[in-house]
Image 1 (cartoon, rainbow, N blue to C red):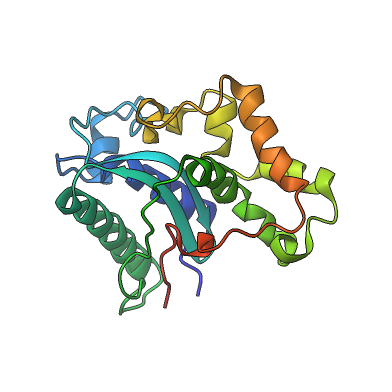
Image 2: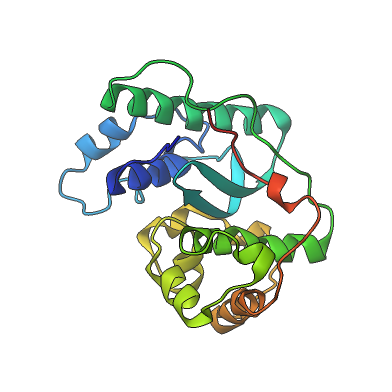
Length: 214
């Protein structure tokens, strides 16, 4: 089932990626209420020390992917608990439903290879292509121009944060991850090289960062 049913659902979850990633507990409604004149109240909120460091993310209609650098197991678990609990409570209330939204624990994989870590920046950001061609990883992208255009238009990932300055760029902490890309053109080149790779296949990659949804 879908866990995002509207543009606002996606945008609110992105705000949660920022606000729940803090040792300070704050509600989104409280943050917005204290800064009614600000066009981006969440992204300018002081949150103190973070629980994890986020390097990339992508929200899909029925799951999400997040690349994180864990500081310790306790804080990592707390971050995901807050993130999923807050979205579940909001989603259930909005849609007049009850029960579990996310089933089981977050599926995760420890990344120890530089080659694999660099690949993940492409894999995570290329996920939206599945929305216009489901079998692209197995069969290759049939229309590369269309795929590139779609990535530029897809708002619910960190893709554009790597290419332009975005208010939500504060979700990410670029400094703690290897500097694989010297500039924005390097990042774009890395992503688009994978678009032209047929087929896209890396053992175990589907297990990285995805939540199992009921």
